[in-house]
Image 1 (cartoon, helix red, strand yellow):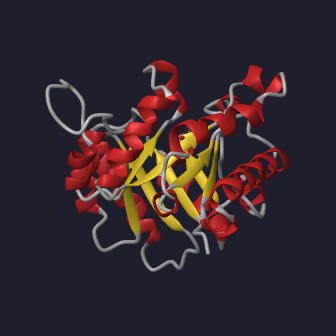
Image 2: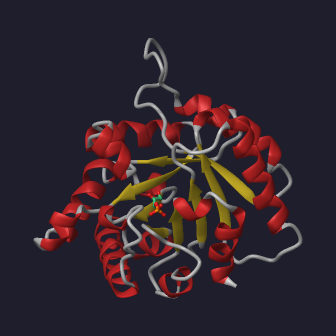
Length: 252
Ligand code: 13P
């Protein structure tokens, strides 16, 4: 059966020292606690190796927030999936709406990133979601379906089975305006149906679909109680252990 996951996405926050400190405080807060979900912290590239070291022996997994669409070579400033994997990180967030909107990441680019992540045995946490205008004009289902089709439906069933999805309505990211539990469930059920049509019910049922967008201690329990919401991808509320922990504990 699919896993419940709570993953932090630190975005471009925290110096190296602050990041190590944050990872340590999450690790310490989790010590000796029984939690009912996987816990992941997504950090900037420069933090990865140190955070992997810091959380060793704990249940925390580490994710990069991006990886290059090329394997290696003369691409100044880029970081490859192989480099990410060499730090000990096991996950990579791909297709975040901030990457799509500010750095021109197209479905085609993301398709390559997913393939390289899988080749390097990283689990992609693949983000999808509509902007406000698309929701208001009733196009949100089509937009999300297209994002999935264009970057992921080239995968074999076996490889698709390695993907984690994160539905992040762009209008809910960093705005304090969360999707309602009903809106999240409706979209997650639609996504699962889309996966079932392509890969069959078993793979669809085994795919974790996380919700992201102003998820916090006060709304996590209601969001996660939906049958098709398997956890969260958390931005702002992952930047302090005291705010991140209650979201993890929403599964208890
Ligand atoms: P916020 O939780 O800050 O809205 O960010 C969500 C997000 O983009 C996680 O990837």
